[in-house]
Image (tube, rainbow, N blue to C red; front, side, top):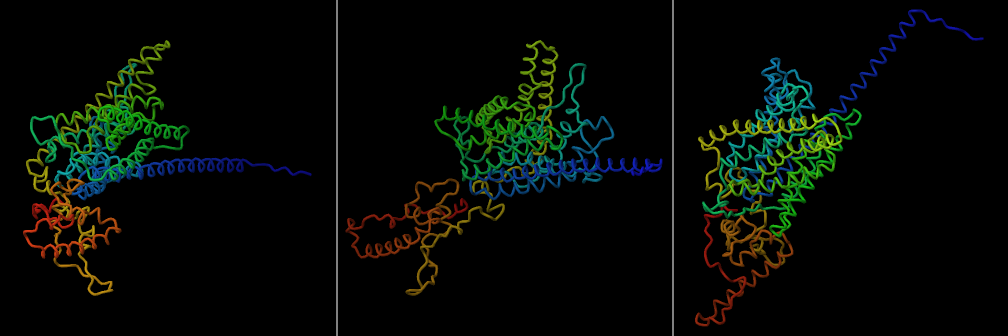
Length: 573
């Protein structure tokens, strides 16, 4: 027997309501999952991009002389600190704060200051690390001569005003660059996926202005009217190389993370495509530059190849999400040539840019804005192919209109960066806060400005050979009070501006007091034996009559300096 259950109208209504509630809960779970996954994706990418600050720090520290290492590192630290405060207080509101007035909204936002009534925290964090990147680009261009107050000022202005307004123009739905031109068949919008323009072209332009107004480092271009320049080498190639590798790693997240979403179908592939194009562009730029440099100079340069690779990655930012991988050959190779040309131009103009920030970021950024309109899937090259295959000529008109609009936007970025920063630098120059005095620049900024040498002389163990046994068979030692070479003399002799001791420096000093010598413990016993040998030789020489010069043979460790080392130059350490 089977029992039949009759459903009443109320039962049907209850089941329908429960089913609707279940559907609502499933939709809510799906929305929460999408939101949380996108937030996690953006925050994860932002953390990797934040690591680029470490890359910039190592790259710049390796490219400057050791007497300015602490100075360049603290500036990179303050970059992150100043940028987050400025972007939190003002920057976010100018960039993405909703504007009720449609006219003013074309140029800047004016709400959500101090993140009031704002809940999109993942986007804020992601955009903050972009703002910090734009500001830290300038640090390399003014290295070794920038007044500390100048650095704090321009870093605040870039991260709080200049970069946020540019991102409003190009990335906010209310911005005039984003809206573009809609005229019948022509529909253009600013095309810059990850910031070739608003981040790198902006930072590179300000780098040029700062380097030009600040002037070259002392000794870089010594004689007016001469084409020859003197290269001032950094103190650590390994540091610079490490920084370059960290930046290459960070660029993968910089471009891939700009997708912002990761859960919709196909978005994962776009992220992967962006990363592939990024590394391909860097590779082509590096190889093109390296081959040209070897053909013209006969050297396989490391540091300049790193810069060329970074220029290629900068150029990929604009269109890495919409270029086929083969198009990276065009974009990257062009970026390598652009870097080569602009770095040579800076030398011709006698503008001192120690890190080639202008050539890398402005050159790579501008080329990226151009290349994406030529070689992307909706660019000029594809449009010509489509027209040849019989499609409408309007495609070519649209592609050229897009190129023209991107060039207008690039010009706007350059003009905005210039008209805002030139007055700032002029005021600082008037207040004598633009550049450090020549004496401080010559002696180094680390000790005078920060009281912390990156490589303190005391840390090397100088004077180890001056220790003497208190008594026989005792491990206790005391330091002789009559050390033959004071730390001041040592600092003057071991010139920190270069990696080599001066030519007039006698061998006795180079053996006993070269810091790198004392990094090897196996030499310590030899040093003490030679000191004992020296004392015995000196005592024997005193007993020889003065007229018997033939018996006074020169000894490597007895010879004294021909000229005294002035203690006033001890600041060079």
